[in-house]
Image: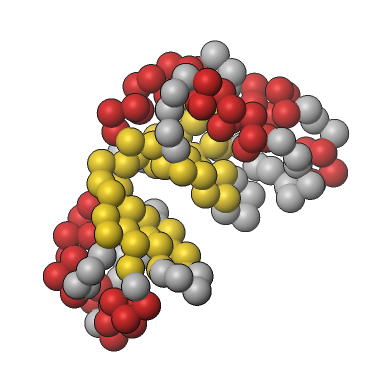
Length: 151
């Protein structure tokens, strides 16, 4: 897989990309480590196993991207969470090897030139974008001319 992908240009990979838009609305949450520990103590506060979510812990904070429904279940257990809401999750549905250079840079360049702010998440073989709901239509319109399909 990685050997095949590396032979393709970034433009080739973009033309093969299907943009999948998650139907859910997401909340981006910044937690201090104490609030994160409190969430871990209550197993019922985890994101649903069939929902898409991201959790990243560094030495400063824990960042979560969770669906609105999951956030509404867990919000009472955290005291000082910083939140940004009304995000949509776009999956750049093309399998990429870790030897691909410039793909995500090109996607973010395209959106930046249209004035669209985003967060980028890289999974093992696919990249994802977090975009405000109000920018979703514009983002999809811009990406449509570079990619295979919007779905």
